[in-house]
Length: 118
Image (cartoon, helix red, strand yellow):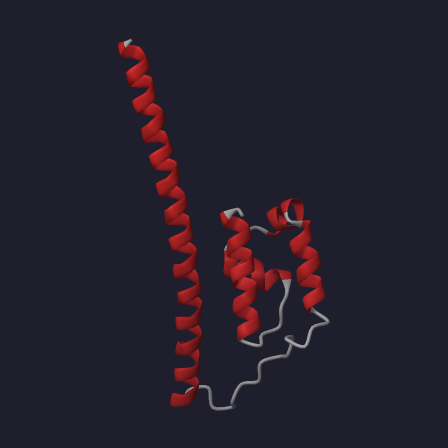
C-alpha cells in the first residue's frame, strides 16, 4: 500500500473516531494530499468517502458555547494527541519502507562491487 493511500485512510479513520463530518476536503487536508491526486489515483477511496456520507459516523460536532473553558481545551488536546498518534504510526511505516529501500540499495552496491572485482 502506498504511503499516500495510508495517509488518506488514516485521516478517514481519525475523522470517524472524532465523529466529524467526513468530506474529501477534510480528508485531503488532514492527509496533506492534493485533491486532484486523490481523484486521479484513488477512485476506490473516493467511493469509500462518498459512502461515508450516508454512514452513521457523520454527525456534525457540536461545541459548547464557551469555547474557552478548560473542558473544551482538554477535548481539543485529546483530539490532537489522537491525530498525532495516527501520524506517528504513518511515519513509522514510512521509515520502515525507507529502511528497506536503503538495505536493498546497499545490497545492489555490494553486488556491483563484487562483480567489478571479478
